[in-house]
View 1: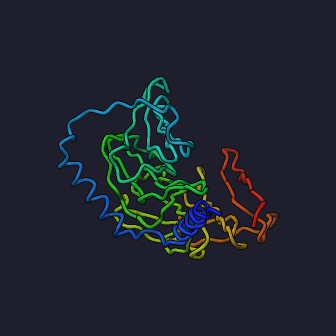
View 2: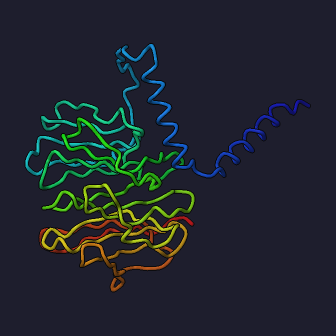
View 3: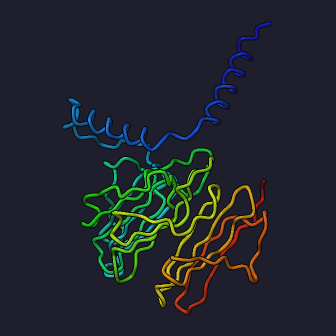
Length: 285
């Protein structure tokens, strides 16, 4: 009896199981890898050779984010789960990739500053988890409409689910971080910057296993924000409100489902000042 094929299958299963149990790469090692990549790209004899995409035509997977400046609806930014950011200036007739030279192409969220259409923020890391959801490298900022980018930190957030820029002050930015998908970590929840991303403060942290998945600002009262949390393994899913620009948060419970069966929550504030919420009930444990 030939046991070689069975042995191979068992070895593959053990190898796959071991890989799944590995800890996430550290921020330091990922930043070192990116620095090495840039060094190798600069030294490569092929660095001046132009490349042309020849297929396949299906690239990137899910559309994770879309944003546009209110002053120019023909300009649209599109974030693809694992395919970077594309920009159009003619209402979608033509698209150009604008994020290919950054340290990640996994995109979770995009925001354009309402008071300055040249300021664009990108939150990296896919935000709809699956077996192959890629983490990002924090948040990126452009001050020239996507021509150049700077990494503004929050590297261990892994999956940035939402970005909110203050309607009048572009230096005030809020970030919603899901954290690691399959392990606990501290860099998750809601973060706020008042200096354009130079520094960040954690303003809502629920636990090292609970993600925040949505974040909106009240267009009629910019001191009020709403955030939603998602607990894949417990009862931490819910909606939170701050009425003091993120300094303090209260969990909203009246009339809302609660418990371990409550899943991912999406929220928004309409122009009629109604708060809309879509709550997904878990169908698996």
